[in-house]
Length: 484
View 1 (cartoon, helix red, strand yellow):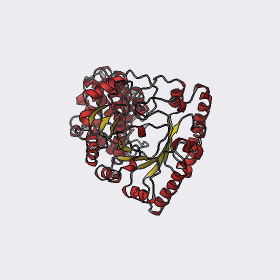
View 2 (cartoon, rainbow, N blue to C red):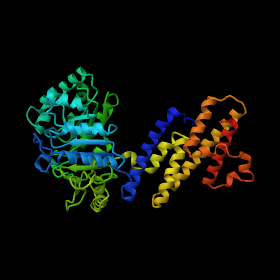
View 3 (cartoon, rainbow, N blue to C red):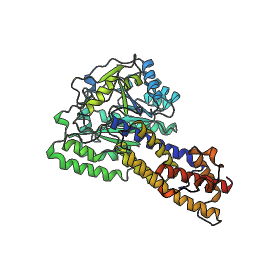
View 4 (tube, helix red, strand yellow):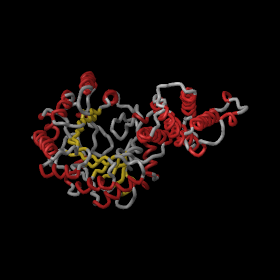
């Protein structure tokens, strides 16, 4: 409760910013209007591909490719929106773009805090390409592998593909070790479908063998027009659902001890195949901006049959102007009528689903620094957007603040009385001062005695906001008595 000394402040602020981000995406979904910029910019730089994967339709489409200068502008625009955390380069086969290395370096040089992802089918990962990737050091390199069984993987992607990818993986590990390089960390995204179902638990063993940092298991969605239409021959049928449940349980059990991150939403995946009716909140149109060739889009088209998927052009419009445009608002409204049980990453953000859950996660810490900041943040948004149901959350924060302050005041009384408590008094005093500074009370620490301030006031019958102010005044007086 008194963890406010300088070495903890940055960690506390980082945690609070993550909480605030969860709230803002929750509020955006509730209001159907973005209150925060996208955390990811996904760039489909080309729809050209050197493979003809059976379950993929991107190679069947054509998009005019955007010049390097406008890709950089899109990155700049997205960063200026204030929440860009990841840039995802993909295709088609993105390594067919000769400027890909310059673009990765551009992000790394200009926005070093932004994570960079690159996704490839792996066939163009020659020794020269691998060393160029290590030079520019994207954060992660995603290599698409759908099954550890060559027969199954190759039947979907092409003869001899997995064998060639394995040679590339060996070369990556060899060159990273030789050059003492951590990056790029290798991940894979594996498509769960009828053809790969039984072999999917083996992907964890495969990922461990080839030193992957992460494995993501994504259910099949036809992406011919990036709208999520489905083709029956890749879907898991009703009679195969018991096998699906067994496979998902095996994956969940194996990932407990796996030395890598395994990303899988098992229950959502099961429901996706078992009952294709929309049951989840969808954040498409809020968390991820997409540029496909020259088009500025969202990741899917929802249920919109008019195919008005894109709302601007990256060589003419800025990402932020499109993000807040009428076309984007139209798209967000269509999502409200979507009945697809989608489990694509753009649609899922479980940490933002419930404002009550977000609040409970913060309250578990019983931390005054976080509680005071959250109260201020929530009261501000409750005033701006009265339709947000925040009243009970704010009141519960006040109640916990009172409990924490009561404990803190008792501890301070004990310190003032000269009693020993299990807190270093020097750090307690400096922590309290730091807390007061972050509450904006720095200039009032030495004002008046608490007895003069509280004379004739019935504390217990005060409104929550007034009572909180009185408690803070009492804290200030204790600072004065300690000579802080």
